[in-house]
Length: 296
Image (cartoon, rainbow, N blue to C red):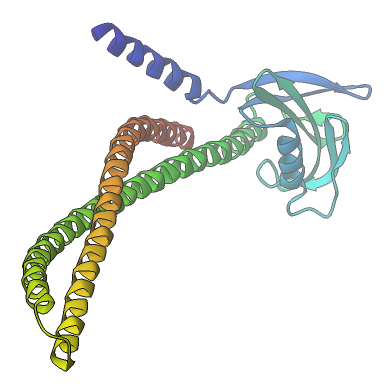
């Protein structure tokens, strides 16, 4: 039992590690655009797609500017951009996007004036880094929020399924309760009918003997009519008993089937309860992941 418990812990730890947040890394570098080596900064954005990064970065550098960015393959270039996060003056921005495993690398170089780029250690360069980090953080936060929403939706669906199982169990138990009530009622009806059958049969036998000894006439015909009524009463009571016995049989079938269904329902509830607890841990892990990324 202890071995199973430790294996469970290792699996959960391994999965938690797999979904843990990754760092946002900034690196100074130079990238060639055309014939020019452009100094700038690489930022690593985990768990996003390159297409999303290209689209959002294009919007970011076009914001507040009349200029439109030009996308050529993985390169994004804009001239005369208003990029106030770095400087108040119009600038040229040279960007490149590259995939690396589960990380997208975004490079950005800001040309302040002809062949003059931000320099390492300068206020503009530090602002460029800050801007890139914030951009990367925003992209990563969006991913983490989507992941958390998906996990929360899964948990919500599981909890709905559990509520449905509980409701179904209550329905099955109510049906068993109704079946037991029906059995009691029909058993009482049979017992009452049997007494009436016994009494009526005894009366019928006694009256039949008397009628057989009566002379023909109106009185005998009236007595024979009475006998037929008694016979019909016995048949009706017997027919009623057959109906009651059929209802008892059906009720017993309901009890048997529902008892089996409840046992299966309880097993399903227990298994789903375990899954829900695991899913709650998943939600907690993704909540922690989001909080950590938001603290970057």
